[in-house]
Amino acid sequence: MREMKDSGIEWIGDVPQNWQLVRIKVCISRRDSGAWGEEATGEPGDCVCIRVADMDYDRLRLKDDLPFTYRNYEEKVIESLKLADGDILIEKSGGGEKTLVGRAVMFRGTHQAVFANFMERIRCPDFVRARFLLYILAVLYQSGYIKNYIKQTTGIQNLDISSMFSKEYLALPSVVVQDRITGFLDRKCSQIDAIIARQQEVIKKLKAYKLSVITEAVTKGLNPDVPMKDSGVEWIGEIPEHWDFRKIKNCCLIVDCKNRTPDPDPDGEYIVVRTTCIRDGSFSYEGSYHTNAENFKEWTAKGQPQHGDIFFTREAPMGEACLVPDADNLCMGQRVMFFRPLDGSDPRYILYSIYGPLAREYIDSKNKGSTVGHLKLGQVASLPLFYCPPKEQSEIADYLDKRCGAIDKVVEKKAKIISKLTDYKKSLIYEVVTGKKEV
Image 1: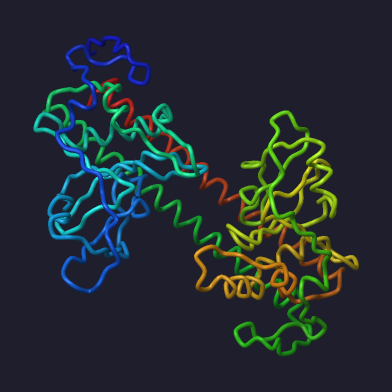
Image 2 (image 1 turned 45 degrees about the horizontal axis):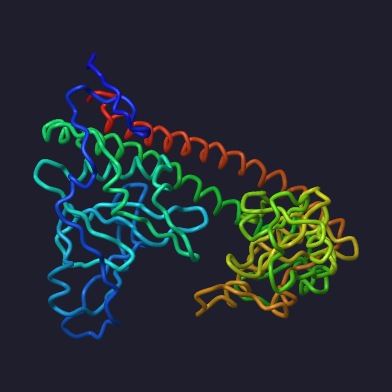
């Protein structure tokens, strides 16, 4: 059992007695800010530019098989910013609503590449192994401690790297111990990542299977002996003879949101539903916020969503839908709308149809060539589906609820396995790089 000492540093805790406490800046020999350059010309000066979007942060490296982005630079810029194998790249600007700025990865390779302006390149002196520092940066990020150095005056988060490196300490062992630690973590994390990847592949296949089950039900029905007719859509083929083609406006009342989102009020009793609440046919309160009675009244003037209606997003992300939960205090934020089925139509069938092939093909066709998916109100009104009698709709919905529910349970189990493995990996990295676990 090694003798430990209190580091006196909140996020580190106890460390081995013979490890040295040093400021992070002492472990860095060089820092460089990236550059975005100019449009590639096909002439000398074109160079691969690594972007934040190229990061595979979970594995602390760049993504495999990148579709490289080329930019044009002056020769002296390429020479100055050219990446070397083992360079650390840290995100200094960016982030998002659910993702903090400050992720770090390592560049591994010999091909010529530079890095974009939202990133900074870090190199270490001989007495610090870059991968050891990379794992330290991962702990700072995963623990959320990095929040102390994030500034946000606009929609972009900025990491005060200089301040963080100057103020924060790490516990530094000898180079021999660093090599032993990084070798151990590289092996263990690689094993964990492989298990996670297999679970993710199973989830991917299950979701594809679920979509095939939905597709079959909302285009062919449940009775294999019913007379069929040509659907008029070549890639769908035949549909039941008594079904017809309809637009969503012929099946549902459509109520759109206002042009701006209601103001937040932490003490408000009413909940504003945002696009982040609607994913893969399910509703979550994640990303919603409260508003006051005055705003609520104004925003529900066109109609208030209620249980039995269907939420639909027409922008960012486009075409997500779910059933409205059983709550009487919901109003829609910007980009969210709802459908209210007419003539006894089953809202579950309408929802499944929105995730069926006819509607998805239509939604995808409206998004081609656009960097920000957006459906206009008239386009939403023309959302297509195959319509059958309400009684049959309910039979199909009951069938899909059962089949899809069973698939969702398996997906949920796989997701829990991934979550546990991810938490274990984070804990392992922390325990090892702070010396609490000896390897």
